[in-house]
Image 1 (cartoon, rainbow, N blue to C red):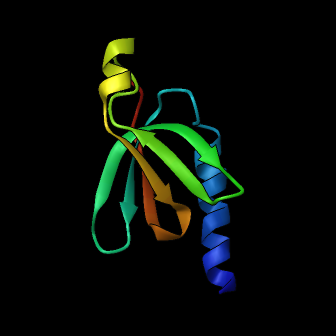
Image 2: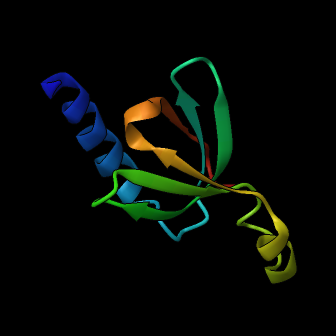
Length: 84
């Protein structure tokens, strides 16, 4: 159990600096699924991260784009993409 919490701490540290900055990341989840987007919000109390697939677009696109709430305990790896 301690190892799992250590992983969550790593993801909190990695993702918290990107919240609200339109930095593109790919979050790789246990089970092989991965989601790409920008970090919109990091909720430390719930151990979740919110990704918006098109957060770098216009305001109208942003509000229509898919948003994913991901449990940090399900995260296996995070890939940070270079700014375009």
